[in-house]
Image (tube, rainbow, N blue to C red; front, side):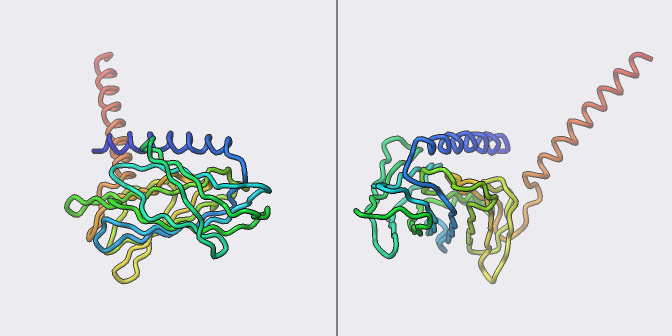
Length: 240
């Protein structure tokens, strides 16, 4: 289980950076900021995602390119894009899964601007998988394939609201997180310098996790030091 999680994080990291490199080829604008809010439904299988982009759009841009990463059995449904109160057409291509691509068709005559608010709302099916008290939550992000306009550390902000008293063991992106509990809802907030292809949380519901990822790493380091010290002591003893 521990090895699978390590492999997952490594693969996710590599795929994420391949998607970022792909952004260089997509012209038309830049990402100024993205605020993401995820609300996990009470049935815990369907989540509602709200993306609030702030974009820079160049002159004569006809469409906004999109990409995402569909992990496990997740799927994106009922996508709705709104620009200045106007609903826009969204086209998605799932022929090359797990990478999902698509585009938002912009209205004719759209003027260039450094400050364009774009709202993207959709549902994620099969977002939460449980086994006893343990859970894994995964939500793909519909990423605008434009490079960030700045290098600010909080370009991407996400708040995930999960029902119940939730304790987090691991999070992706692997950045510092803030966990708050308000009644029967646990909110997990993270920020990042770029836009990730997905958000992933794992942990337990109802009771804290003792063997967290950090503690597993600490125990592994301690074990290596003990084993190394033992064989070093044996080697010194044999020389005497």
